[in-house]
Length: 159
Image (cartoon, rainbow, N blue to C red; front, top):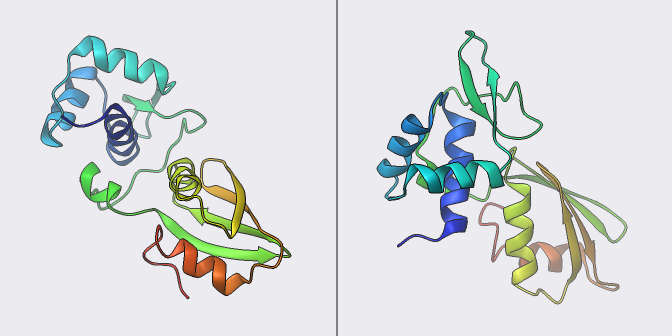
């Protein structure tokens, strides 16, 4: 059985990549991803994720994630499980002992969670938004050492 966090991540990926107008449509998409859940459970998940409905460009009402009433949909949709195989990492930049990591929308929190749970010695902590992570490096740690540590979580980081 797949975990609740995995299900919530899949819901976010599906909503951000397709125009979903009803819980029935969303349940069908989740079933394609291997999730079996009731409409009541889905309703609770949507409430927890603070999902709302908003008018899309073509006038239909579709589910959107918070702060994304005009959420940009991908032109080449992937399945939620395909999207979850990627960290969403886009770039990393440094200023002193602070690193700023840019991700695709919706990926920053889960990537920061993975970074924090690896307890890397090089990292004091992270703060995540929707598509940005601020990371504080430990004193004396080099940028190369940090990137080498992050490579355990971010496969496509340039060393």
